[in-house]
Image (cartoon, helix red, strand yellow):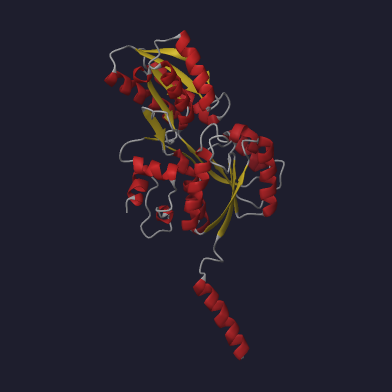
Length: 357
């Protein structure tokens, strides 16, 4: 009898010392990018590295065992990692449907027992239906509103130009690529802006593959062809930094307005962009909050498109600085969960407020 009593006391002590051990969720995220943040490896910027960093911050607050596998921009490796993750049997699997690689592959695997959440890029509705018919357990998704971001960036660049110059607006666009949803949707937003602004002389658009080096080369070429260019719309900040380097080489940085997306830090020797939209780097943390609420509060998950992009203002700059230089460990992400005593809405303004507490 005494031995039985001691056994129960031991179990109770374990629960008191470690109350979350049993409840912790195992979530695997297959990240398309690199685990390393060096510029030599991440030639298109550190976006995916920072996504993971912030997801780890959120996981610490949400009682999640987060496992991240890196595909190193290799879609063949990405499929192998997804197959491996499914064998590991996590409670939830988070994936990015880059160039439709993941959605084409999932139906070939036995994923029925693993809830899958799409982040940043998801299949079209027809493919969703097909995957669910094949038994793929898709519980939800979240993507940023890239269309609105593309349009907003063009609008902000035009405003910046008209307040600093009396010259006609001559715009060049350097896009990310021809295939990913993020690139295509940002360009669609840009195209909508162009149709609404006959006062803007649109020089043209050219793919830069999200790359600082490619944008540098292509900007120099375009300036030879059209020296009147005074606005350059860039699909991300890495492209923008290549543009800035080209403008410095031509000694005309004060004559051209440049904007991008990501809130990236300024590389050494390169001037800051005139406009940078960002905030979408936080969606990985938002996905984890959604999954925890689905699991613990039994909330229904949908397929959301979040208007998360914000212009980098003085108020937002401390948040961006933490994202770029350290992390967001100072923010308690559990306050954005529906299980919190006073749940806060997941917005940039509330994240800035949480950082300043």
